[in-house]
Length: 210
Image 1: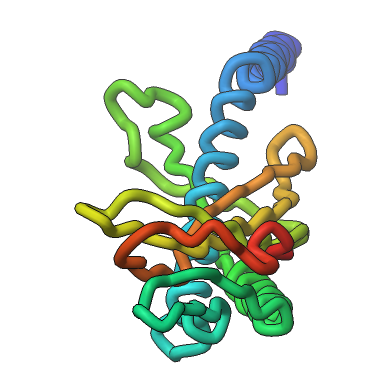
Image 2: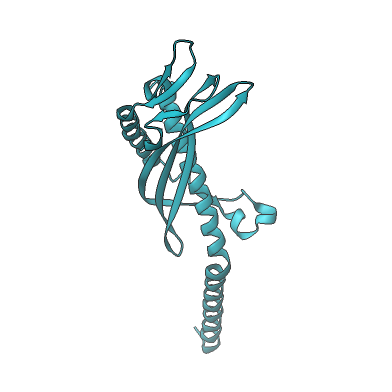
């Protein structure tokens, strides 16, 4: 190899090195934050779907039933006078819900979690296209499941009583610049009934839903 060829090779190597460094800096400053936002959005959506599916499974299997959670007390004329919460049943359901949610979230696969490269490089034209950059889930922590009671009007002299499960999950993922914790909150209506007549003014244990 002649001296001129070696110099040409060194110049080429230097140009490639400068371009690599420049592209890396551009990526870190411009593209990485966008990629992380897309990753977080996808993880949030997938986790919410998993939570909803886990609770829907329990509803379909008959594990979540309004009559087992709430006892409706009536007077001699059939008017609803009080609602009484079965705290033991609520606690049982809470444990069961968290177990199912954890199992669902642990199954989030790398094939399902991936950001198309086109959505990062040129989202205006290539959104959703190109090979996917996998999102690696490092840890899943289900913080809590809270049962919430609410009343809404359902027509003339009718009130709908709903029991909603609020699930809070924290998921740690590996991004191009490190790790990121994503908080996911999902609310699913687990059971409801329509009360005909006046809404009872007495709720036993309703304010104590775990």
